[in-house]
Length: 211
Image 1 (cartoon, rainbow, N blue to C red):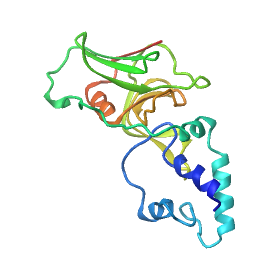
Image 2: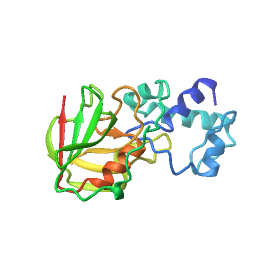
Image 3: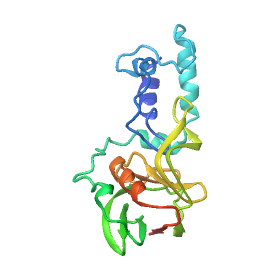
Image 4: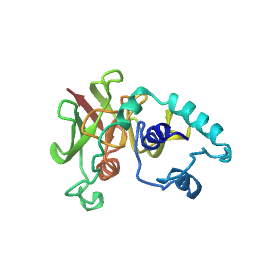
């Protein structure tokens, strides 16, 4: 594999609609993607023919969306949430819950009984794939959702854990949150934030997306 292809491929492994820090890659894939690895072969592909591997990697990189390519070039951003959100189980039951997405601020606010309980950073849709604005409701929850539209470098469905569906193909879910909008229209939250919101929100609760 050429150095140029390797530099491009490695960031693309973890980009897409969502980034999930777990589970770790299988040992065979992790070994192939480790720094200094001579070849990068996808599952089920042989690694003995360097030219074939290089051709496969180039072909797969060519299929990556422009959105993911741009994201792969961004400087890394810490995904740690400090301070962490409260333990969902420690909160009293609420009569009402609402999630507000403030696109202009790239932030969310989570309300219970009309009081802000938690807030944090988000990354929403890029200009060519905008996040829909309006008043919606949670129509489904999926703690281990995988994208039906986008795949990562290995052609595996992109992970979208702690997902709340609010408008057709659009979900609020855990994902990598850089310092700009970077998704295909979904709203990404960092792991701790997404886990907290998912635990508290229920199907039917309002989701408001404003500029």
